[in-house]
Length: 249
Ligand code: AMP
Image 1: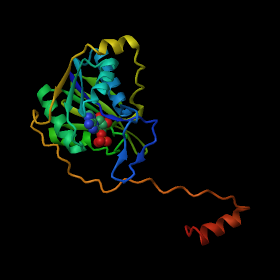
Image 2: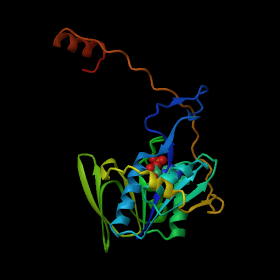
Image 3: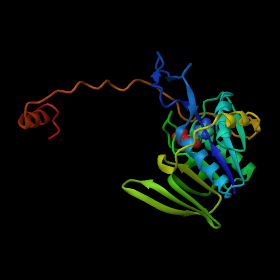
Image 4: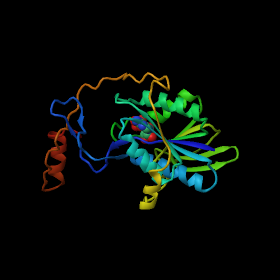
């Protein structure tokens, strides 16, 4: 089973982002960037399948600027065998990423494509679903457990109020949720080894994919500041305030 894992370079989850002064977008100049946390979980899942002898190869794929190579090197250090960067300075929206991933999945004849359930920068939660539709294959989003057998996959999915189990034939697309696993801590020797692993660079044109954006960002702004709370003397005052001021009862 050949696995492709999509890894996105995003603003590190510890960074508090701010809108640009002209509100034209989020200011990401000189902030720390890291692998999207859900994609780390996807890489970990793929590498565990390889270690268990259930996957033959794990290929990490990223789309974006040249610096995405750092993200790919992190995936290689975690245990991916090789990496592919679709390099472009264009703004990539989920549909464009899904089209690029489709082209790569077909080129690589992948059996399984693993993605994060969402990228923590744009919170779209769209790419995996779009990719499965474009490939015309089965999908299991929000995976919290993944078992492979001869006929395909059994995936447990986190849904409102519980866990749903689904069976999938290969090829398939799976997106990872937080509880699927805990990504490994990468050790220095593996970081060194990752520098020697193959990293191929392609362009969207070589894959024949039009990546032009379909959505226009109108404005990025801070959420309204939360108002300070107040203390009430008793339940009667609370009820009065809820009724007369907040007008919620
Ligand atoms: P989104 O639909 O943008 O929330 O992203 C969902 C998942 O798609 C991410 O967790 C990644 O696995 C994958 N993905 C999105 N954008 C990219 C990208 N530029 N490069 C690689 N993978 C991506």
